[in-house]
Length: 117
Length: 112
Image 1 (tube, each protein chain N blue to C red):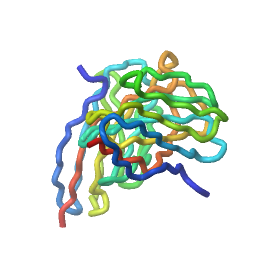
Image 2 (image 1 turned 180 degrees about the vertical axis):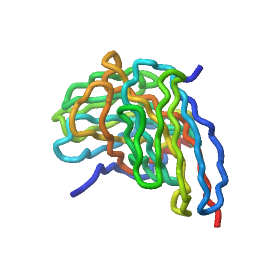
Image 3 (image 1 turned 60 degrees about the vertical axis):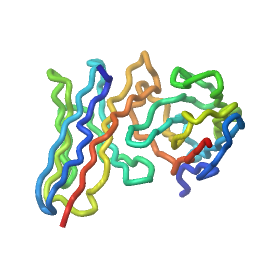
Image 4 (image 1 turned 90 degrees about the horizontal axis):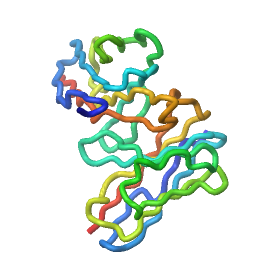
């Protein structure tokens, strides 16, 4: 049984470049979350999907950040014109249902470590 | 005030000892709570869910104090493998369907 996978695991981008981060959730999981984790901090919520619907994107830091999940499975987080402050680990998580308030276990992927130089 | 606050530690604990730490939350509507553990440079993994006043799972005990809005985690008979960062996360509410607020985590270091 495969868990959540993310690719690439590491990405180095020059400031101003666009990047795309991929998340493959556990098969059949309805909910998908993206988080940003800076060093020494907990994961910060970015956005949430229930199937293909993006129900909450209030955590996206700017309009340079865009996420999609067009077929309700794989999701891509895109960051345009990367800045140094975007350097962080980007975590994807999925959960089986779409329970209100996120009141169920989330399964995390290994994350993508983005470094913007 | 942050929505979720945790003592960052580190808590240095001799092997075999007991350690406890708290997590305070501001959203009184939170009904359930989770403790995740995160090893260095790894992803968070669920340690324990708390849906009522508390939960116990082996050496780990979580207790919820709704009046004072904090949840504690106690680890008994600490093992070297318990060294990790422990993240607290209250569930959201129906107003914030999937948006969860993680604490910054409490680091525990178990020493031989």
